[in-house]
Length: 218
Image 1 (cartoon, rainbow, N blue to C red):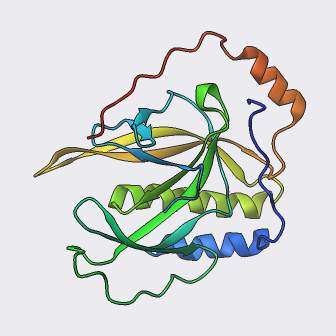
Image 2: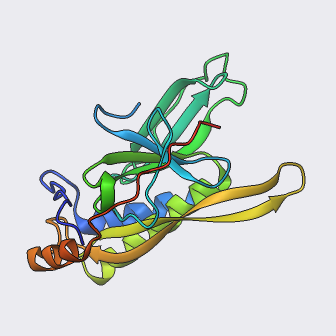
Protein backbone atom coordinates (compact mmCIF):
# COMPACT_ATOMS: atom_id res chain seq x y z
CA UNK A 1 0.00 0.00 0.00
CA UNK A 2 1.16 3.49 -0.80
CA UNK A 3 2.54 5.60 2.03
CA UNK A 4 0.31 8.47 0.86
CA UNK A 5 -2.48 7.35 3.19
CA UNK A 6 -3.13 10.20 5.60
CA UNK A 7 -4.15 8.95 9.04
CA UNK A 8 -7.72 9.72 10.04
CA UNK A 9 -8.06 11.76 13.22
CA UNK A 10 -10.01 9.83 15.87
CA UNK A 11 -10.27 12.52 18.57
CA UNK A 12 -13.84 13.34 19.49
CA UNK A 13 -15.35 10.57 17.38
CA UNK A 14 -18.00 8.21 18.77
CA UNK A 15 -16.94 4.80 20.02
CA UNK A 16 -16.42 1.91 17.62
CA UNK A 17 -19.32 0.14 19.35
CA UNK A 18 -21.73 3.00 18.67
CA UNK A 19 -20.44 3.21 15.10
CA UNK A 20 -21.26 -0.48 14.57
CA UNK A 21 -24.79 -0.13 15.94
CA UNK A 22 -25.59 3.11 14.13
CA UNK A 23 -24.39 1.87 10.74
CA UNK A 24 -26.58 -1.22 11.00
CA UNK A 25 -29.63 0.89 11.79
CA UNK A 26 -28.92 3.44 9.06
CA UNK A 27 -28.26 0.77 6.44
CA UNK A 28 -31.76 -0.53 6.91
CA UNK A 29 -33.22 2.89 6.08
CA UNK A 30 -33.69 3.29 2.78
CA UNK A 31 -21.93 21.01 -0.47
CA UNK A 32 -18.53 19.40 -0.07
CA UNK A 33 -15.87 21.01 2.10
CA UNK A 34 -13.08 22.98 0.46
CA UNK A 35 -10.41 20.82 -1.15
CA UNK A 36 -12.73 17.81 -1.45
CA UNK A 37 -13.82 16.66 -4.89
CA UNK A 38 -17.08 14.97 -5.81
CA UNK A 39 -16.62 11.36 -6.91
CA UNK A 40 -19.33 9.69 -8.96
CA UNK A 41 -20.07 7.07 -11.59
CA UNK A 42 -21.28 8.54 -14.88
CA UNK A 43 -23.99 7.07 -17.06
CA UNK A 44 -21.47 5.10 -19.11
CA UNK A 45 -20.17 3.27 -16.01
CA UNK A 46 -16.93 5.25 -15.62
CA UNK A 47 -15.78 6.60 -12.27
CA UNK A 48 -15.04 10.34 -12.58
CA UNK A 49 -14.33 13.22 -10.23
CA UNK A 50 -14.18 17.00 -10.11
CA UNK A 51 -15.61 19.73 -12.31
CA UNK A 52 -13.70 18.46 -15.35
CA UNK A 53 -14.99 14.91 -14.90
CA UNK A 54 -11.49 13.40 -14.84
CA UNK A 55 -11.54 9.65 -15.02
CA UNK A 56 -10.36 7.71 -11.96
CA UNK A 57 -7.23 5.64 -12.52
CA UNK A 58 -8.19 1.96 -12.91
CA UNK A 59 -7.54 -0.21 -9.85
CA UNK A 60 -6.58 2.76 -7.70
CA UNK A 61 -7.09 2.18 -4.00
CA UNK A 62 -9.20 4.35 -1.73
CA UNK A 63 -9.38 4.46 2.07
CA UNK A 64 -12.88 5.10 3.40
CA UNK A 65 -13.25 7.04 6.65
CA UNK A 66 -15.57 4.76 8.69
CA UNK A 67 -16.82 7.72 10.74
CA UNK A 68 -17.81 9.73 7.67
CA UNK A 69 -20.94 7.83 6.64
CA UNK A 70 -23.82 10.26 6.15
CA UNK A 71 -27.53 10.03 5.53
CA UNK A 72 -30.19 12.60 4.89
CA UNK A 73 -32.06 14.30 2.08
CA UNK A 74 -31.41 16.36 -1.03
CA UNK A 75 -33.70 18.46 -3.24
CA UNK A 76 -32.77 18.90 -6.90
CA UNK A 77 -33.90 21.57 -9.33
CA UNK A 78 -32.97 21.58 -12.99
CA UNK A 79 -29.57 19.96 -12.52
CA UNK A 80 -28.89 22.13 -9.47
CA UNK A 81 -28.90 21.29 -5.77
CA UNK A 82 -31.60 23.46 -4.18
CA UNK A 83 -31.20 22.17 -0.63
CA UNK A 84 -29.36 19.43 1.19
CA UNK A 85 -29.58 18.12 4.75
CA UNK A 86 -27.10 15.46 5.76
CA UNK A 87 -26.00 14.14 9.14
CA UNK A 88 -23.83 11.31 10.51
CA UNK A 89 -25.26 7.82 10.29
CA UNK A 90 -24.50 7.55 13.98
CA UNK A 91 -27.37 9.99 14.56
CA UNK A 92 -31.07 9.96 13.52
CA UNK A 93 -32.02 11.22 10.08
CA UNK A 94 -32.10 15.03 10.01
CA UNK A 95 -35.52 16.65 10.07
CA UNK A 96 -36.67 18.51 7.00
CA UNK A 97 -39.40 21.04 6.30
CA UNK A 98 -41.28 21.40 3.03
CA UNK A 99 -38.94 21.04 0.03
CA UNK A 100 -38.20 24.04 -2.18
CA UNK A 101 -41.08 24.59 -4.63
CA UNK A 102 -38.73 24.17 -7.62
CA UNK A 103 -37.81 20.63 -6.52
CA UNK A 104 -39.79 18.42 -8.91
CA UNK A 105 -39.14 15.25 -6.89
CA UNK A 106 -39.25 16.90 -3.48
CA UNK A 107 -36.82 15.55 -0.91
CA UNK A 108 -34.87 12.48 -2.00
CA UNK A 109 -33.11 10.10 0.39
CA UNK A 110 -29.33 10.42 0.13
CA UNK A 111 -26.42 8.51 1.65
CA UNK A 112 -22.68 8.86 1.28
CA UNK A 113 -19.21 8.92 2.82
CA UNK A 114 -15.75 10.45 2.48
CA UNK A 115 -12.75 8.64 1.07
CA UNK A 116 -9.15 9.27 0.17
CA UNK A 117 -7.06 7.97 -2.74
CA UNK A 118 -3.96 6.17 -1.49
CA UNK A 119 -2.34 4.86 -4.68
CA UNK A 120 -1.38 5.98 -8.16
CA UNK A 121 -1.42 9.43 -9.70
CA UNK A 122 -4.30 10.70 -7.54
CA UNK A 123 -2.82 9.59 -4.20
CA UNK A 124 -3.68 12.02 -1.42
CA UNK A 125 -6.83 13.35 -3.08
CA UNK A 126 -9.87 13.53 -0.80
CA UNK A 127 -13.34 12.95 -2.20
CA UNK A 128 -16.95 12.61 -1.23
CA UNK A 129 -19.37 10.11 -2.73
CA UNK A 130 -23.13 10.48 -2.32
CA UNK A 131 -26.00 8.65 -3.95
CA UNK A 132 -29.77 8.92 -4.34
CA UNK A 133 -30.24 6.10 -6.85
CA UNK A 134 -31.33 2.65 -5.72
CA UNK A 135 -28.05 1.05 -6.82
CA UNK A 136 -25.90 3.77 -5.30
CA UNK A 137 -27.69 3.67 -1.96
CA UNK A 138 -27.42 -0.11 -1.89
CA UNK A 139 -23.65 0.06 -2.47
CA UNK A 140 -23.19 2.56 0.37
CA UNK A 141 -25.42 0.55 2.71
CA UNK A 142 -23.55 -2.68 1.94
CA UNK A 143 -20.23 -1.00 2.71
CA UNK A 144 -21.67 0.44 5.93
CA UNK A 145 -22.76 -3.04 7.01
CA UNK A 146 -19.30 -4.40 6.16
CA UNK A 147 -17.72 -1.73 8.38
CA UNK A 148 -20.16 -2.56 11.18
CA UNK A 149 -19.30 -6.27 10.95
CA UNK A 150 -15.58 -5.51 10.90
CA UNK A 151 -15.93 -3.22 13.93
CA UNK A 152 -17.41 -6.15 15.85
CA UNK A 153 -14.73 -8.51 14.60
CA UNK A 154 -11.63 -6.31 15.04
CA UNK A 155 -12.14 -2.76 16.39
CA UNK A 156 -8.49 -1.94 15.69
CA UNK A 157 -8.87 -2.37 11.92
CA UNK A 158 -12.00 -0.56 10.75
CA UNK A 159 -10.83 1.45 7.74
CA UNK A 160 -11.82 -0.32 4.51
CA UNK A 161 -9.41 0.05 1.60
CA UNK A 162 -11.50 -0.33 -1.54
CA UNK A 163 -11.25 -0.34 -5.30
CA UNK A 164 -14.02 1.22 -7.37
CA UNK A 165 -15.95 -1.30 -9.42
CA UNK A 166 -19.24 -1.42 -11.25
CA UNK A 167 -22.19 -3.65 -11.97
CA UNK A 168 -25.18 -3.18 -14.24
CA UNK A 169 -28.75 -4.22 -14.91
CA UNK A 170 -31.09 -3.84 -17.84
CA UNK A 171 -33.90 -1.31 -17.49
CA UNK A 172 -36.90 -1.84 -19.76
CA UNK A 173 -37.06 1.88 -20.66
CA UNK A 174 -33.52 3.23 -20.19
CA UNK A 175 -31.44 0.26 -21.25
CA UNK A 176 -28.26 -0.67 -19.38
CA UNK A 177 -27.97 1.02 -15.99
CA UNK A 178 -24.59 0.99 -14.23
CA UNK A 179 -24.31 0.79 -10.46
CA UNK A 180 -21.27 1.37 -8.20
CA UNK A 181 -19.47 -1.43 -6.38
CA UNK A 182 -16.97 -0.86 -3.57
CA UNK A 183 -14.64 -3.86 -3.40
CA UNK A 184 -12.92 -4.14 -0.01
CA UNK A 185 -9.30 -5.18 -0.51
CA UNK A 186 -8.15 -5.01 3.11
CA UNK A 187 -8.78 -3.39 6.48
CA UNK A 188 -6.35 -0.98 8.14
CA UNK A 189 -6.35 1.08 11.32
CA UNK A 190 -7.32 4.71 11.76
CA UNK A 191 -3.61 5.48 12.26
CA UNK A 192 -2.64 4.23 8.81
CA UNK A 193 -0.82 1.14 7.51
CA UNK A 194 2.41 -0.31 8.78
CA UNK A 195 5.32 1.78 7.47
CA UNK A 196 7.32 -1.22 6.26
CA UNK A 197 4.36 -2.54 4.30
CA UNK A 198 3.71 0.87 2.79
CA UNK A 199 7.33 1.25 1.71
CA UNK A 200 7.36 -2.21 0.15
CA UNK A 201 4.25 -1.50 -1.87
CA UNK A 202 5.61 1.88 -2.95
CA UNK A 203 8.77 0.20 -4.28
CA UNK A 204 6.67 -2.17 -6.37
CA UNK A 205 4.53 0.59 -7.89
CA UNK A 206 5.21 1.32 -11.57
CA UNK A 207 7.17 4.49 -12.17
CA UNK A 208 5.83 5.20 -15.64
CA UNK A 209 2.11 5.87 -15.06
CA UNK A 210 -0.22 6.28 -18.05
CA UNK A 211 -1.76 9.70 -18.48
CA UNK A 212 -5.37 9.88 -17.31
CA UNK A 213 -7.94 10.16 -20.07
CA UNK A 214 -10.18 13.17 -19.51
CA UNK A 215 -13.85 12.52 -20.06
CA UNK A 216 -16.57 14.92 -21.05
CA UNK A 217 -19.45 15.23 -18.57
CA UNK A 218 -22.51 13.26 -19.58
